[in-house]
Image 1 (cartoon, rainbow, N blue to C red):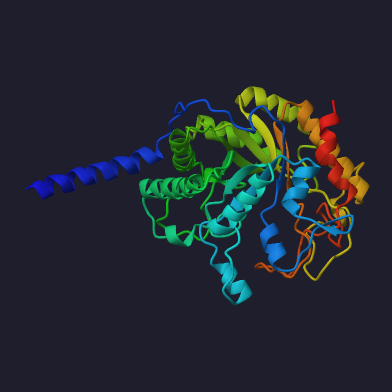
Image 2 (image 1 turned 90 degrees about the vertical axis):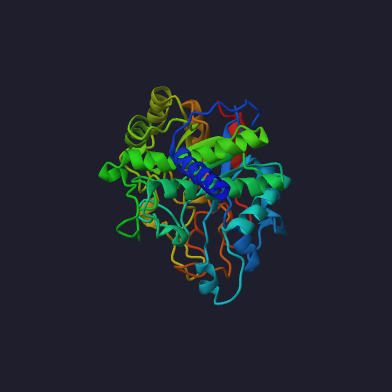
Length: 399
């Protein structure tokens, strides 16, 4: 009888945890200073650096080999963005041998330590996938594919997020900022899902379900905040500024999600054309007031050459230029200086450059060998720093 009572109590507690992890909270957390609060974020996504260095990539300043994390801080970066995948086992298949699981937990922990050792804050980007998550690819993690109950999915998201952050906490490596999802234009965990997997597609009007799972991730961050007495900046993320108003007003009003700080977006002007370069500041200023959230460009980049540095075809081609900014080092530099200044003047909170250090090396991924981004980094094709790095420090002088 006593065992039965204990079993009953455990079941009730477990059900309570499942339900509470899905609920939105707007929890009041103790206000603790965050090194990114009240600071314009000059961010760089350096997720590839460990893999590049492990496979022969060398970073140089005036021909002298340098530590890239030290270099970026010296040049003016104050935050490093890093992606984290649930279980990227596919990387072993790419290399056909035992290898670090890049963008898995241990690799991310290594990068966080490198960033913090060099005086930079961290934005940890949870993709909630085993591989790239973007608007066309939001694959369900393999470990979660059999889930058919929204409460169980909430619990899985909550515990993955919490356990990851808790493990970082134990090593003194908590990020100052966390993204719940990556470019979630129609939601996340949408592709390669079983028929019974919970539908989180807001493009199919599943705002409530999507909101529940978002809140599960947010609640995990807030519970870590309570435990660690921290005040993490939480960001949500869509691609293309044209989606900002629709997405964030929908998430708040229909999805019941409000306990986040940053409305983040990717901005690649040759792909994202409905909001022009000159119109972008007005949109940022407008939405900052209407949403009562900070606006941050979480991804951007611009090419400096059309030359292929290796056999991996470049993503940026000759159609990537926009008026006034030629494809050159000076064009890249000018674009970034103007973008940063525009976002700053509009009241935005920051700009983050995507993979400015993905130089050519012997690294591999699912699509190629080398780099598909070597013509859009802040290094030339010999790994030397270019003048475009100036944008990271010159912003302090802009009015």
